Image (cartoon, rainbow, N blue to C red; front, side, top):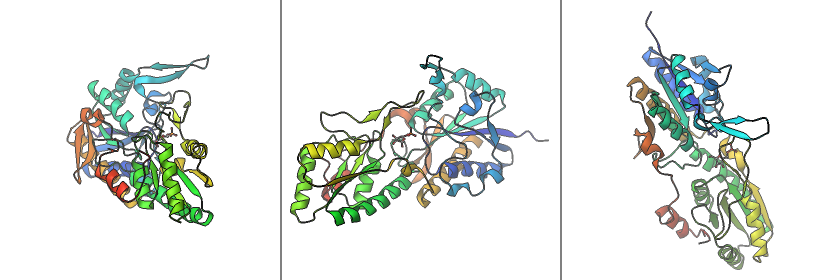
Length: 366
Ligand code: F6P
């Protein structure tokens, strides 16, 4: 009987609409070869590292129709970085352990010929190290935040923008009825992509993003002008990582072993700052939070994710490891892990996107 090759697939970091479409794309493309079997590690690399191990075979029955579903059938975690694996000690403190050598050995011992790691910036940094340690690995970029510079866009971003825009539209009508200022907080830890796209799509007056620290007095002035124009209401989009000039970002400590602090709550901080700066209008705050990461991916994200899945499997079939698939100039290609993780994708305050937003009357508080 012909020896079958085995590829292990996993999803790491925060989830994102489109992950299942990638998984399905990989399995469908692999099936055409007849020489490859696809397996999934549950909860990123934890499925391999934990005892008992949790690895499932991705049969066509398991993956049929999943491209329509949000989340990930393989589950995910941001508490399983094999380079800094969190170990909870008896005294409640957390010790970080480098388990990368153990991970590479375990994957090889299990007979896997290749790995496809679907994840964001943090996950691809892990891919890079594992590749240097001799693992045959291919990366697929994911994040709703669209903050990876090596790909023109990540899947999940369009879905998040659509969800945020739908919510924004709803807030506009109630803002108008009550002559209120509505603050809508969206995700965007370090980059304001979701915020600025939503502000343009929805027609916001004010957009506050991490890349442009805001002057609260300028925000108040813009609101005052709106009321003076006779419009009598205003809509603000703020990214969770936005901060005032000379101010700090609103953050809470993450769960034990988690890789990052928890953001969320800037809408309330902004509301208070507006009041303190003399804004007379009634203000209401809405924090969209994880609704932006949930539910059905829009068609664009399903397509992009499916193409990424097929491409990742083709890299595996051709033995082209150490690479991350990417969207470049409207075609699906790939970059080295070095390039994939070199630069962060910030909104450039001098870009046409920001200039156009300003041209549409959106104030950034700068
Ligand atoms: O990185 C994507 C992201 O959506 C950020 O914008 C947000 O701060 C973070 O995930 C929240 O992740 P979680 O609550 O899952 O830790």
